[in-house]
Length: 156
Image (cartoon, rainbow, N blue to C red):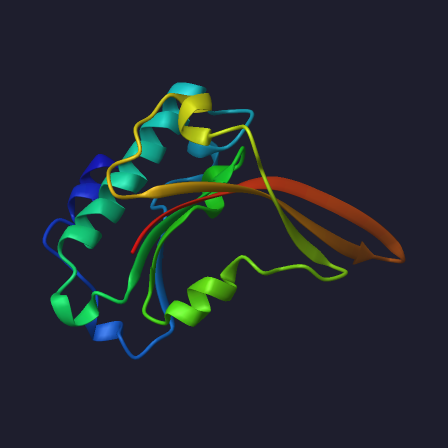
């Protein structure tokens, strides 16, 4: 994770600026970052690496892309869905967390921060926001509901 995070130093994906959004998923096996085979220490280390990669991208952002939002989305407790995201379209970023329909919803988490729960630092100027992500799935007439936390760390 550390080598991957540091590989973003000095890089910004301007070649994808015509897209609304560009992302990178974690380069690890799901067992490393997800229960029951992970630990809080491993998850904290991975979170810190994800944020270090995002900070490198933010610091390398050219002036002509100052409108682009650099972010990290950390899913918890199963971190395998986590990613680093560049939103070239600010309207798309603004609508990204508007997921409230019959099959999917996001509810803000108040009074809790993932960085404090796992004990890792959020680099300046990133802002931390948490949501409960709820999805429903139907299989053979039975509806199952899944919940996880989505933690957004973004800098504008």
